Image (tube, rainbow over all chains, first blue to last red; front, side, top):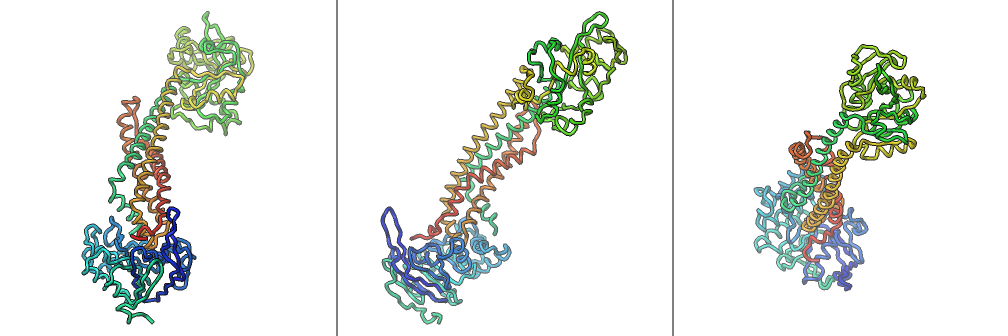
Amino acid sequence: MLKMENVSKIYRHRGQSVTALNGANAEIRDGDFVSIVGPSGSGKSTLLLMLGGMLSPSSGRVLLDGQSIYDLDANARAQLRKQKIGFVFQTFNLVPYLTALENVQVPLFLSKIDEKEQQTRAAALLERVGLGDRIHHKPSELSIGQQQRVALARMLANDPAVILADEPTGNLDPETSQQVIDFLENVNAEGRTIVMVTHDPRAAERAKRILRLDRGAIVSEKVGKNSRHVAA
Amino acid sequence: MKMRTLVLREIFERKSQLVTSFLAILLGITVIVSIKNITFYSEKAVAREMDSLGANVLILPKSSTLQDYYAADMQGETIPEEYVTRLAMSDLAGLDNLSPKLSMPVEVQGASFTLTGILPKSEFQAKAAWGGAGIFSRPVGCGASVGMMGSDDKKTLARKRVIDNLEDNEILVGADVGARLKVKEGDTLNLLGRTFHVTAILPQTGTVDDSRIFAHLHVVQDLSNKGPVISAIEVIGCCQEISKGLVSKINSLLPDAKVVTITQIADAQIRINRMMANLSLMFLVIIVFVGGASIANYMYANVFERRREIGTLMALGANSGLVLRIFLFKALILGVAGGIGGYVIGTILAVVLGPKLAGVVVLPMPLLALMAVGVSVALALVASYFPARRAARLDPCATFQEV
C-alpha cells in the first residue's frame, strides 16, 4: 500500500519559496487504479515523483508497504524502485541507441538477470504489447504509439507491484491513447497498483478513483468508471 | 544486455562527437611512442659508439690535468688503489668498466716507452668482499656490450679497457712498441731487470696506448716502489648516467680525486639524448593538458546531453555507483583504444622515420605498448572522473517533464 502522510514540498528558487505540495494525505491500496488530475503547477508530478522515491518531501512521510521511503538512502530507494515500481513517462524516455528489445532489457540488466533470460522475457513482453515483429528496431524507427508500447513493456519488465505513469497518453492520438489505457486496465486487473497523472479527462475517468489536486492539496476525490474493481 | 553493450552502443551512436577527444589522445600517444622508440635506439647506438671509443670518464689525482693523462699519465701524482674498491662496492649505476692504471717510464733497447700497470678482471673477482655486491652484481645499463665482461682475447684491452687475466710475468705491447722493438707474441722482453712474456701485440688505436707496454698493476707498483697507488682510473661510464650526474656522484664518493669526462665525445650525445627526453616530456605535458581537457570537455557535454537517459536509468533502479561505472567504463574504452592506436601508429612512424631523423635502425618495442595504454587509460579515467561523478549525482527528477 502507498500512503502519504501530511506531505509538503517547498521549492526554493532565487530566494523565493514555491509550495508544490501542501500537507497532502492519500492512501492508495494494493490493486487500486488512481488518476491524479489538476491544473498545471498543481503538484501532480511532484506527488508522483515522491511516490516513486525520487523527490524527498520537505515534511511528512511517504510509505510503501509500511516502509517510510525517505528513511532509506538514495541507493536503497533505487533498489526499492527496481523491485517494486514501474515507471512510464509522457515522452517515453526510451534509450535512443538501443533496440526495442534492449530497451525492455534495461530494468532486467539493472536487476542483474542473466542475459539469455533478459532476452526471453523482453521478447515476450514486446509480443504482449504487439511489437513482436519490431524487437530489433530502434525508437527512431518506430511510430510514437509503438514507442509508448515499448515503454509499457519496459514498465512491466521487473514485474512491479506499483506502476507510476506520468501523462502516459499526453503525446498520443486518441486511438493510441485508448490502447494505452486499455493496457493499463489489463495490468491493473492483474493486481498491480496504478497511479496515473493525466490532463486527459477521458483517460482519468477510466481509473477507479480520481484525485484532484489544486495548489498542492488534494481538494476532491471522485469515483471513476472502474470503481467496482477496487480491491477490498 | 551487459554494461559493455550499453556503453559500446552509445559510443558508436555518437561517434562523431567522440572523434576530437579520441584524436587528441591518439595523436599525443603516437608522438610519445615515436619519440620514446627512436630515443631508445638512438641511445643504444650512442652507447655502442661510446663502447667503441673506450673510456669516457677519468678519475685522476686532484692536481692532475687531462693533458697530464694524455701525456701518458706520468704526472707523478697518484691516488690510492683503494679508490677502485670504493667504486666497485658502491651502488652507482652506469659504471660499466673500471680500469685502474699506474704508469712509469721504461727504457728498452735505447728507446723510451711507458710501462702501464693494469688490473685484470680476475683480480676484481678474486676479492671475496666484492663478489656479492657492487659492480659485479650491478646490471649493465647502457645496453652496450661492455661491462666487466672481459675476454680471453687479450687484444680487447685496446677497446674495452679490461681483460680477464694477466699473469705477473705477462705483458701486452702497444702497436708502436711492437713495431719499434720488433717483438711478436710469444717473445720475451726484459724490463727493469725482469723478464716478461709478450702475450699479445695490441692493434693500432691511434692513441698514446700504442706506445705503452701493459703489465699487471701490482708488478708495476713493485717496480716503481710507489706502493698500492694508481695514477688514474679509466671508466666507461654509461652515457645516460653521465647525463644524470654520474660525475658528481663519483666526486662525492671520491672527494680527494678529480673526475673528468671526455666532454667532446659525451656532451654532444648527452645533448641529443637530453633533447629527446625533454621533447618526450613536453609532449607528455601537452597530451595531459590538451588531451585531458578535451576528454573532460567531451565527457561533461556527454553527461549534459544524456541527463534524461541517466535520470531514466535511475528511475528504473540504477544507483549512482552504476552510473559512475558506465561513464568510467566508457573512458576506459577510450583510453585503451587511444593507447593501442597510438602505440601502433607511433611505432610505424618510429620505424619509418627513425633512420631518417636519427640515423638509427628502429625496431618495435612491445614494452612501449604497456606504457602507451597505461598513460592513455590513466589520462582518460582521471579526465572523466569528475564528469562521471556529476552524472552519478544527477537528479533523476530531470526525467520528468514537469516538476
